[in-house]
Length: 207
Image (cartoon, rainbow, N blue to C red; front, side):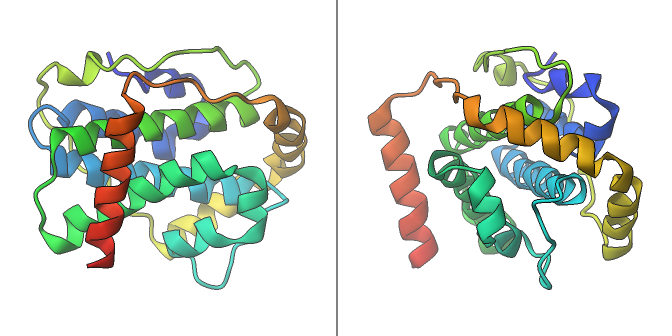
């Protein structure tokens, strides 16, 4: 059981549900793999949003930082959630490219931030949303590592866009109605600790 099992009830969420579950299952034994897989799940979910929401136009550069930076995306995702996504991106990049040690605190915050984002996506786009709560005890249970979900290729992204073309009108209308009433769930982590983790990763990223 993981905090992300709720995503499995919606088949169209599979591209990001699988890496989200994998990220939590590997947390206890490999924090670095956890944060890299959190980043992959987030990127897949962001690209899925671009494929189903007519308010979002894919920029010429489909790198994650570019997708997060468009005005259209920032109109949908508020500043609080953007900070959470940016944290996952920065820590994931640090683990993948800089070879820096990733702590369990950093990995847990990535999982929590990812859960808030996935909860937002489900709230906005799912037809039968069920409120939930992140349980920080679930990732602590040791589990065998799952295969890392490979990044989507450009061809796969175009296929995703084509598959979801018929859903764009329906899901865009649903998101426009739901988005305004979403309230982020509080997480069981102190404000001081959260600020320190955010500031530390920004300082590392700035060198």
